Image (cartoon, rainbow, N blue to C red; front, side, top):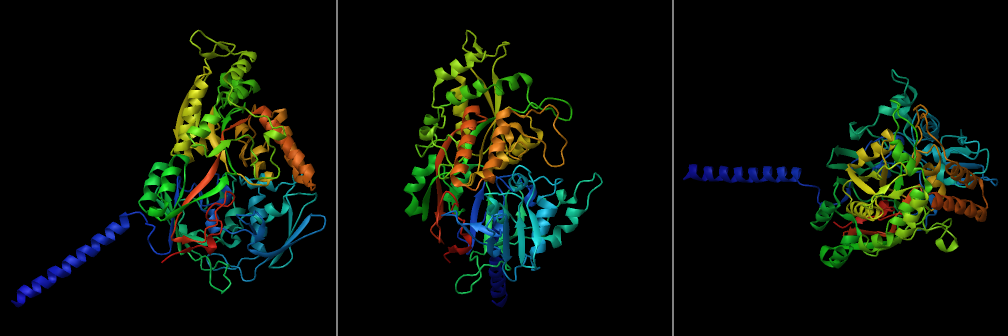
Length: 590
């Protein structure tokens, strides 16, 4: 009797132990679920390409979580607000800004942050010609292309100055992440055996995430490649609420890597995600399920970004003296009438109605309609409404011809056939590529689509430069100068005629077109102009040139929708800031 009771007790204890082990195994294998207390789970179609901010060229990154700016932009009004700097003062001539840091600022490792970190970040990193960073394009001032000067006044006050007027000065002086000098100083000043800064190889995705130091709301906790990035609340972040409670309130962010948008949708509907970028084809479904699914679908109005098809106009050669683009195709792409014909040949109204379910409108300009610098079609902007006959007339006028099978040939008899690159996983982009293939097929062109993972896609475009056309997009802003790295002939995002990046030799055979240089010059002139009306006219002229020359064929400007769980409170959604621009004040119901 006693042995039986003892055996029963041991078996019951063993069953409890096995159940606990099973629970631990299931917890370890299962994705982070949205019902975990005080944890926000956010999907991303691609993992981080690097943890080194200045070297990042991917649209998908965690830097918004781990860095704060000297000043921040309100996500609803786009007005500037204090960040790491508690205040700033601009001189009467607009050529000097003095920022005053908050008292007691610290890095995420507990070390003090001072104006020395600001000087280090700009002078040793952002201004360093050996370190490739797209920020250089927007920081250079006027015709001289000089960088701003920095002067330390004391440990909390720093002065930025420019030699000539620079209209977007304050946004670009104060909105860039500051990097920790005490961690990165050595890597920025020492070089490797090839004479390159060691900084180029630090803080890659193979770095221990807990060694990445920032000054933002969160710090890295862990990274599992192709699965997730986990961030935890930064205990040294400066922000507090009116009652003196530390912000942010949400303890952890899980950045869940899910490449396919259909899979993201399944995970959101099953409760594994707290938020979802709502694609047009699923908007009716998700809107209908709001109450049952316990979430809200927010409408932020028209997107501020752009989606386009881009031609490779680069006539340069690689290190092996091979042309980036097949010379036959290059002759097509560099013919303006060919590019215009493609623009007329794509039915963007059908794309709006069929792919975007009518939730948008054809896009005409790189500057968003919300910007005061936008030039509308009513104000004279050239547009490309679907007109196949006009497209064919343009092609014939440029020396192209059709064979008896209706196939388009160039003047030498070459069949017009080229490849369109697309980043895999985005269903809307895949549908757009299919329609482009069909529409241009009606003009006698043969389009081959090639889908690549996002990071491979970016590498192909910017590093190898070996491509024909691509379907892509840029995020946008109300201040046009934020896009100068797209329109500068040496810009890091000047993808239609990409120049050498920092540390790279000149590209043999690369040609700068007159209209291309004119856009660059107009952007520089507009950045120098303080009169708002004159700035508008300068940017209007850039839009006229872009519409005439068509380096990008703009597609559709969709409405922005995002679904967020009801348990997340404090959302103030907009197309400018998205759902989480005020992350610091959001709360999750326990």
